[in-house]
Amino acid sequence: MGLEEYKGVFIFAQQVDNEVSSIALELLGKARDLAENLDDKTVTAVLIGSEVGGLVDELAEYGADRVIVIDDPELKEYRTEPYAHALASAINEYKPEIMLVGATAIGRDLGPRVSARVHTGLTADCTVLEIGDFPLVAVPGKEDEQKHKQLLMTRPAFGGNTIATIACPDYRPQMATVRPGVMQKIEPKKGAKAEVVNYNPGFTPNDKYVTIDKVVKEVSNVANIMDAKVLVSGGRGVGSPENFDMLKDLAALFKGGMVSCSRAVVDSGWMPKDMQVGQTGKTVRPHVYFAIGISGAIQHVAGMEESDIIIAINKDENAPIFEVADYGIVGDLNKIVPELTKKIKAEQEAKANA
Image 1 (cartoon, rainbow, N blue to C red):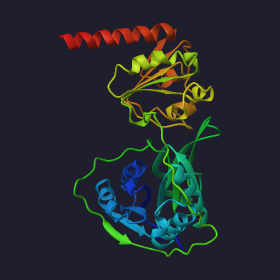
Image 2 (image 1 turned 90 degrees about the horizontal axis):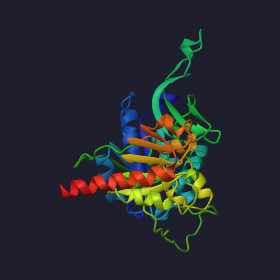
Image 3 (image 1 turned 45 degrees about the vertical axis):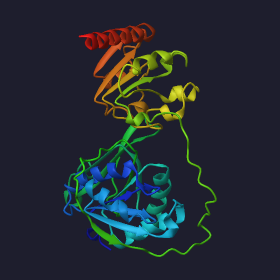
Image 4 (image 1 turned 120 degrees about the vertical axis):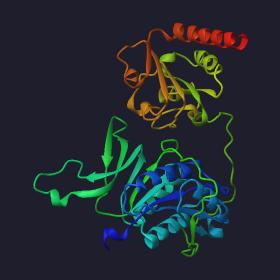
């Protein structure tokens, strides 16, 4: 089968409890962007679940031209085997050129299994996706072999110490998983409609179909740092968990302000994992990101470099964080943070009394 038979950009439209996950809408936004550079500009969402037809319009408003609905009682809760069978069957039937999956707990389980079943590669945890030529550097005398309009998938590699750009020129679909928060949703078009294709490959339970006895919802008292407008983030340089009180005081001055941290802080047991920013934590895009006592390792930067304004405070003037910061302060954070908090608070009170 020729590669030319594979067309369009598909996304796995993850839903949980019949609610579209935010990652699905983010992937639709990226799919729209990628499709503009392809001959077939159709964006298709693959919606898998039980009684999920009511979610189609939301997917259409966020960029789906077509929604393939795979609806079956066996798909009510996520289970590896029936979901892998559903998505792999849809790929074999409708032949997408590109298939994007969210790097959620579900997507990290589903993506690799599906890619193996349809005999293609998978690039995991991508931070950048774009259409370009491959090889990236043309080989003299072999220009006729140049592969055009490939999906170039960029991700941190070797523990985050380098960035790799990967292509899959000889197999289809080109598959990638993308972490939540990396791509941006488009502005929804109210009233937009999508073509609906109902497809069911049939489900016959086998010894790989697990039985779910009980579903326990995760309960966390920690607010989602991905929703924060202002993040005051601390690293090992903050010195102790008690010193994070300074950061909390600063964050409290801003509407939508929250405290977050680096991996070193979580590993030290100072803060919960839910508050970690970085390659192994969460990817955030606040309006303002304070990096306090954070050296700026590439693993951390990968999770916050898209922030609108980055303000770094560190006693080491050579810290890598200053390379990505819009504003940098070199000095003792124990003196700078309380003084900064004091100044901002005074300014806010002055405006309130004006």
